[in-house]
Length: 141
Image 1 (tube, rainbow, N blue to C red):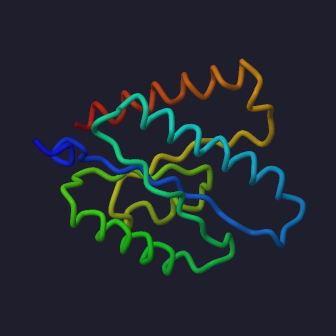
Image 2 (cartoon, rainbow, N blue to C red):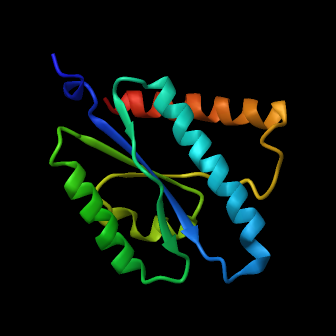
């Protein structure tokens, strides 16, 4: 039996990339780290059913229609495999405007601006949130 038969869900973190805005570099780096931790926790909790795709990075000021098109091309390529569910994770609320055009489920999280990822409270918060997100995905199966 091929393990590929059971992995039917893809998680794609979405994150803006813009080094030109110096005021937000620290916040953006922190949010990227948190987003990837969410995704990794969910992959661990749903091991055997979920593939964690590389983070989809895009310029904050890029054309939204082009980004939706590019992202959907990623999804179309992934659906060449037996993936039946695709989830996009993001802190960027601008994706909500294009949600209907995406070839998957968008999960937008209110962003944590800063914090200490080594702090036990932050780690506990991420794990608790990841458990709730995992339950949401399980309910879709």
